[in-house]
Length: 428
Image (cartoon, rainbow, N blue to C red):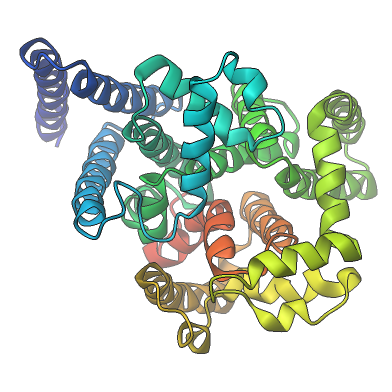
């Protein structure tokens, strides 16, 4: 057995060096800076993913899963590009209508006197797209490849969460599921911010788990803060989803008289003060106000019903309870009968994926006493439901729900992997 492990490690090292050699060779041989940019972004994504894996002292097999996930996404990216140009979408993908806005905003900004001033009042992700255009040139493939890299970075993070829930086998299952997760792969190569938001939500999960422990792990705090920064800049209303499980854990700690209650309370107060003093705090208040006021909800409903994928039932309820009605749809949509009136193929993909999730939901419910024994599993489930609640304040639209809940699905994957793996094998 030690000889096999040694040979396996050698093969992985040879594979890794081969990838680097090929990338460097292509960089030198191909006298095309655009292609070189693509290779550099992909290589950087791989190296950062391996760094996270090494940081958590994962087995070498995680590197193979990272390579697999990267390969799957590159393959899907190439196929979708060919399909996009074939049907006349000029590189845009079906279902990513917001991508046109980000691209147009970025092009307008880089051709203006001051691109930062030109984007004042525009969507936050437009700044990122414009910055990439400013540095690398107006090429939508660049931010799309950055999104691809963000999705691959989630692989070692989910392995770590799965390892904590049920051991290495569960970690491997979680990493593989994310590699093959259709919506994760699809949105990761689109010109949309959802991959980065999902990465931010998963990173923030380590902060939530860390605050539930007696001793704070500095590494996890740093990762969690990075997640908070990503979420606050791209989808700040989701900070509410991060704060809810932390608040509940603090209340439980107070009830049980645990010593970490005071420490966590001070941390939360400081965090609220910092975010309250920045624009993120104002954005959260505005977003919550728009989602609960009559004027804001009327506008949200109008946008949601455009394009045929809006959930009309949700729009019939007053602002105060609309999010409660939308909550089940945030977890279960698209329901089978919702697909009848939708013609876009991407939503058929979501329907097939949702059937698979119905089975996983059932298995998780059936095995809840077995799967939710440890505090880690309970905290992960609570966090996922908090994200679903945050999604309930968004557009009552299947497309928006499908994208916005990606972080919740990512967080749930370690739990469902524990059910699929079938054997509890906790690491020390």
